Image (cartoon, rainbow, N blue to C red):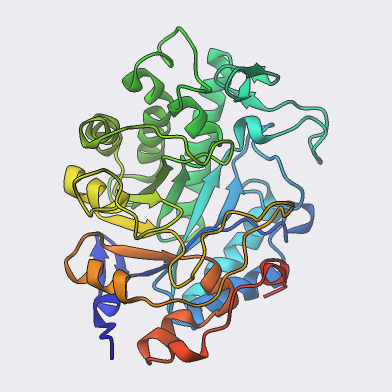
Length: 369
């Protein structure tokens, strides 16, 4: 019988103290009418905290910028009503003994003009491209860049004021921050384009502004990915040397924890090593890392042809995950669809009840709780 105790070691980083290594992954649900977290959203997160999750990272929450949102009924992280809703989420999670961080999000070029409630506002991109080679969005000015940096900083300050335990900056999956990283969508010829160092400047300014807003001890998590929703095979870096050149400036800017998004956590990132992306990131930076990618499921999330939402999947063995945890390849494990299907996933694993796990079905993503 597999020993799951490595998942249940306490984790501490400054004021952030977790009872275990299990994280709820951020997942967009479009379940916040008028962009305000409702009673159903409060209950959704409360159930995962009650189910034993160590740290909850919320679904993407839009920062206070006119073009940050690109989808209906996603929650905002600005405005009195939305922030009041998030305060109730925090209180409910804390009442169950859980910890929680908001994911601060700007969709960049994924926004299409006409998306409510902002209407005809176009998507903002470093070079006007949501896809490489196709200029059909707003090319960001220097003032636009400053405005977005300030929006992230204001969101981080609000997170601390509301009582959140950490904050995550969304720098992955082909959204705005990642569009600056990706040379396919960033062909600027100023200080924000060209080399990897220059393409990272936008993210570094956000991290530095966030650190200034929350102080020296409040944990900052940064999520990044090689893959993009526009191109699942895209890669920011090709080897460990390039990964180091990418990561170290972000680490030095103030990141405390790296959230390393992959589609399948068990896949090696580079030839010649079994380390996954989180493993390499921990080795290079010395910072704690979160691994993620189809944990506890037998298929990754990529939709099947003709479908538009996460792929359904059956429960799967955790043996490979535990082997990697036992050799400290990474520090924390983010669980996504499996925790949608099983709000008490952490408790079931701890009790050895994997045989009771429910499969993930796409309707569950949009259920109230």
